[in-house]
Length: 430
Image (cartoon, rainbow, N blue to C red):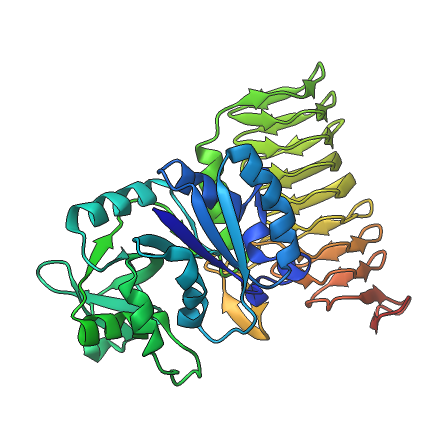
């Protein structure tokens, strides 16, 4: 069986994380999200994959051309030139599929690879025209909800139903298996009220116009996440770290204490006086310490310098320096970031309420009591800067010395306080 992964989107809600890379290329434990997915597919017998790409596609192609050789799998690419909806994106796979069933999924999903085994088994047992993966949710009004009949076949599809529609709580999980008939249904699909060609509309056409049968496969007790919001990366990181085994390839000096599962990559060194609490991941060619305190669920990619500071439950991307007396909690620090001495990031409100973060100019409840900051690529801070919880620092921005950041900082901005304490912002100052 072949697989199609729709990976063309920009990931706007994840900015500034996605300002320099497409969402599927966000790294977790040394591999992009998309590589974790491809490895899961390969482990379940799928070795021929089409990636439908668009935004910053050159990054995806350059990386996976090498990975395909290493994994001995075949990866093809096709560019989505217009963004006209999920059915439009899926239709790019028509010539790739030929006359065989295929798995198709959204490229921003991060799931337990066991799910692939379950749905492939169920499809082969039933051999209907299609299969849709479902998950139970507590807030069906926020999802596309699928109603099944007594034989687990799709009966009705309702997008974000109201309570009086009694549609149930089985949400579309974004992983499907179909045969060639779905492309005939896509040909008959009209634009929705959102002015897009919706894949769920194509599914209804398959059922109603072609008498096709789509079986629902409900996944329970397996990790699933659509990585649509920055803090969802912490959940995916935790899933991976909880399953990671200890491996020390780099060097640990004397007088270092470790606890729990630790991965330390090639060329990395942990200097004397440091304390590592696992699970935590430290990639290649990093310098940790001396006297660094790395707390659980921290993931540090490659070529970073983490000095005498404390880092807890955070993602630190490559080529970043956090060298002197810093505290980083529940935060995502992008690549090529430099934090001045004494920079601290707050991760808790005084009233202990959930922290909200601005997403596309709208404040969104993260559902988390603890959430620090998101810092974009190539940003930096001066000495003793303080960043309040739930704030985002745009790419290429500079935070001045002794500055308190109480709001999101746009990209390419110099943000500082003058001698009177007034905050000044200068866009493109250099």
